[in-house]
Length: 261
Image (cartoon, rainbow, N blue to C red; front, side, top):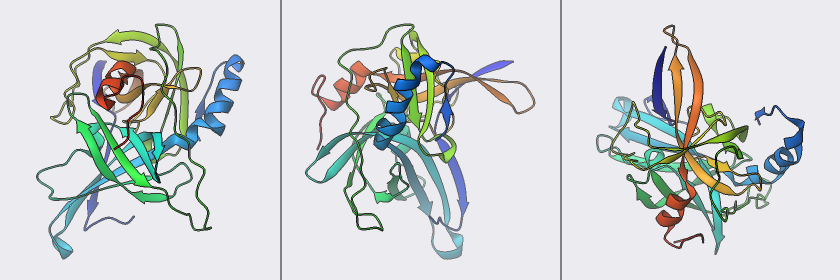
């Protein structure tokens, strides 16, 4: 079998334009942790979609890249979201470009990209708080950052939107830190430093989703995963890779504090 390292972004090709909680747990001892994740932390989980298009009318070509994100800040009516650069990066061959996201309840928002870095494979997008169809402001949650990094053997959870699903939660453990090279590397993801390796299952669409510790605090942002191919088109998950906390802090520019623009 062949090992393959993939960026966890899901691209969906579209013809003529675009219209537009799963749970893995093996141990009862983590039930309180999972309850916190499913009742509170998921309110900071978002699904990010980037639409690329060119042409007009019946000659329009378009595709959507779909990933995940995590709300980390609320300030003056704006929510700020961490995701991957490769989820929201522009494509020069498709001049029309728009970023939208869905909150954990499925409400749709337009977004602005306010900061991005291919070398970190991180980006910040913001969206304005708005009322839902019932005239209420949805109860969203800014997930806090951890005070320190996680170590080998620590329990972690991945929360995101793999395969377009909402609020998927998987548990795993930290394997360590290692430098990885993606099989499908692109200019939008130039990560060359050691990343956090873990066993919380991720899949296509998990890119940009949060990795949290047992206190439900952000310790990483998922960006890639390793799978084996069996020769018949099937794949088996091996491990996930996340941008570690120290790189997130440096990207945001204020050490352990969050930063909004």
